[in-house]
Amino acid sequence: MSSSWEYGAVLKEDVLDVTCPVVPGNKLVRYILGLVFPPKCIFCGTLLHPLAYVEICPLCYKEIPFVKGKTCTTCGKPIDKPFGPAQCLDCRDRKNYFAWNVSPCEYRGIIREAIVRFKFFGKRRYARTLGSLMLYSLRRKKLCLHDVVVVYTPLHKEKLKERGFNQAKLLAEVIAQGLGCTLGRDILLKIKNTPPQSSLSRGQRMQNLRGAFRLNKNISIAGKNILLVDDVYTTGTTINECARLLIKAGAKEVYAVTAAIGRGID
Image (tube, rainbow, N blue to C red; front, side, top):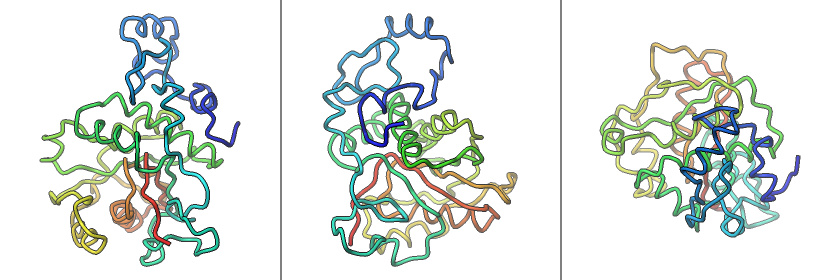
């Protein structure tokens, strides 16, 4: 498999190992559906081939800010200084309860715009394309994840009612299907309706999430490896707090995958 972010490699269905969630494996039916409801690029709306699974046109693909170069060895953030520390400042300044995080893209440009539309403007279909990029980022790093439970970061019930869906859950469904792994539904619960992390400083983020999550007591994760899914990784406070609870509940190891990530502070 190609180790680069080549357009053909990323968009090949056999590389992603995913099938249409509506009509799995039936390409004739999918082709007919694609003629009636043609796939469109999630960035510019260009019509794509009826069988297109990953909805990105070649022109927009060139504009995607893929993560490249030196990255934090724990969270995967791009780091500008080639000879500086191996970890970003956030990961150096705390105890990390997750082993690593992988993100295909930086949180800027057309990826940021797409994620905003996905979360706040009801573009649920974007999950398939963003989730496929996440899958490819896992595979391109040759990470073997056949024996994990896929878990997503939760939304508070009020936020879920307002938005109508949990974007992390939609991404997790794509990831679990692509990896052929179990999707752990409602393993993590959010019990405190907190202000958005994006509106807070680095110091405020940890305080904001203190006591915000809990584990579902009816589900055991003891001895299991967990792949935690979220849409955006900024400082990693949310991922790390969720990972802390999972480890405390007996999880063997916690890994993470996110659709996009901010840049690291050296």
